[in-house]
Image 1 (cartoon, rainbow, N blue to C red):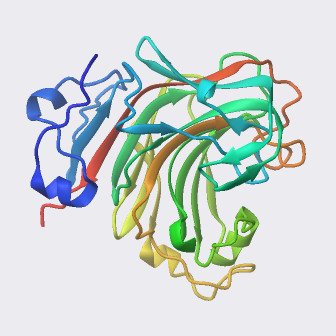
Image 2 (cartoon, rainbow, N blue to C red):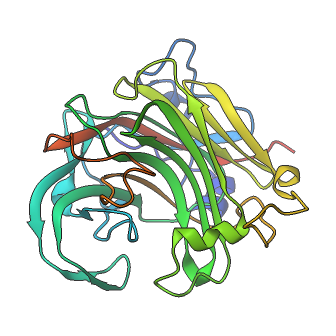
Length: 303
């Protein structure tokens, strides 16, 4: 099994609990796009996941669901690794109601299973990259993602890349932010009081073709990338957007809490699909989003 390239670096340990890749390891670049080097100023590669096996020291599978928006529940069979590719799969199969360790509450019964993976440890700042693609089978409604997420102590902090079945020619970038989100029923719509920070970015190819997506997150900005091209940047100055626009009533800033890194693949409910993700009536199950590799770079500014 190929190692995850973890060596020693006290500076990175202090930030993430992970350690830096050795120079020899980092020269073995994954398949990406023309001109890819895997090197970035102020960022140090500390995790290089080629999906040669499931490493429970680094990853855990989700067992919850996406709020009230999802029509499936994350299950162990929704995450499979074969031949260097991680497959997140939605299947039409009954899932009984039961307790979710992720959400610490009882979940209803579902007619579909789906897949989610998240890091065991939290990180703070850095660059995350993944090469992935949406299903090649006929689909009309789904969400495939790469994102950071933290909601401990009611501080909802989330930076997303999302691909939707209803928008096959676009990538969506999100910042979702809220304070005081301690109630389990505190939902996405309530984060609108901190602003609607979603944006669509046209793609030059279909989402079911391999693409490298990336997010940079520092104390001062967030930036989103497709195949090495920056498509959006938000700074604290951008977020300090007084006077606020309705329904925003609270100030937002670049997320500052430790967070887990997550990837998932799920389908929306019939009520949500027309607005986000797409209607699922044209889906053929099982359907799978494939992830070729993942990399995490700690933020290590030279100054």
